[in-house]
Length: 294
Image (cartoon, rainbow, N blue to C red; front, side, top):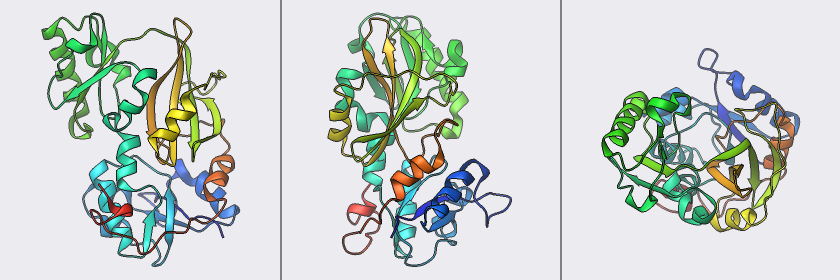
């Protein structure tokens, strides 16, 4: 028996998978795994029960591969699935740990740029002199580099506030958590995305932003940190710093990390669905145990 897969429905044709994830859904079916679709729009609107109405009762514990879900909505999804005797293999607590920078930062602190965060403008004195990067718990606006991302001098409090205000305005309702400021490090070459399942790299390849460029990274020491994070399915984006050191610039929950075209969907989905995961006992609701912790 194979582990089931949940994905997102096409908003215009809800009985079919969203085109962005259709190849992965088809790969799961071809490999013999059950699939079901959730209504991502309904979930974001706060109606988790409507979001899972197409998931068969007794569907079991499943991986999710789909659009990004805010942490609170992910917990609601876990609860709604539990009512249908279904569940998410990645618990809400583990999802938060991998998805948001404050969850994974302490584990990777020695291998990632120094960072601070707050609801408002963070106190950046611990980052020392120099430049910085503004983002939220999940995303930056690197395509708005000069106005809403890069801070040339962290000692310039007014300049920092201006970038934070611009970032917050552009993110709007999509702001995830609070404001993060990271020390700027000069990198060379493209980022590489590493996909980890149970602490093992199942694919090392290009970052979706540079799909035609691939660099073989040195992962020495990173596997130990991934294992310490204790999240089953994660991605790490790594890049070489100007001094030659390999740095982890981002960690993400693998369920929502974008798959570059070079990654055959059967490679990824085959690893995820190779055998059925046996849940222990009933599926708890949010706040009531492993599968619903938040």
